[in-house]
Length: 172
View 1 (cartoon, rainbow, N blue to C red):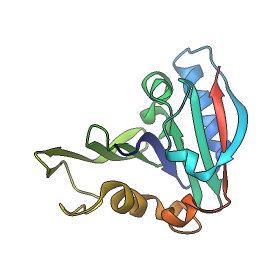
View 2: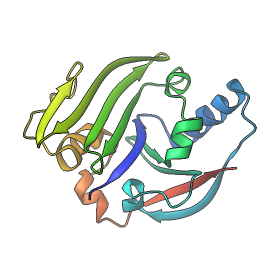
View 3: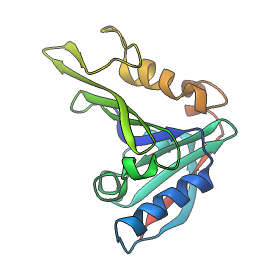
View 4: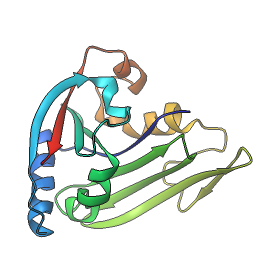
């Protein structure tokens, strides 16, 4: 089994991302807040979340990467509302189910998407292939790592073994 995680990446900073998420709570009339929990090693950004209410954020000079637990994604991560504040890359990587999705959101709408699935070890790519994925690409170490490289100070692989920290938040 491999990694499975869901999230977004953008050129904005952590404070703007948190404000946009909090704004979605207000727009959707959800009585929740997002509060700081702890610092974690960078690798936690792609690990399965142990609780239902987790938001992990890496933010640096080049942008922000945020991953969330399934519950947060399903109930609170309204990409169309958030992308009204800034452009974002959405990603859903599931090496468990071997299905993946990437989408580009801007001005409150999904502008581009690519879905990747496998049947009998054959990769199928549907939708506009805006990331130029090839059938031989590894989605986690290749496609995902390439898609988020512009938001990181060094390669994604190097970040996984670095001393960099992320901030863990909880939706309460």
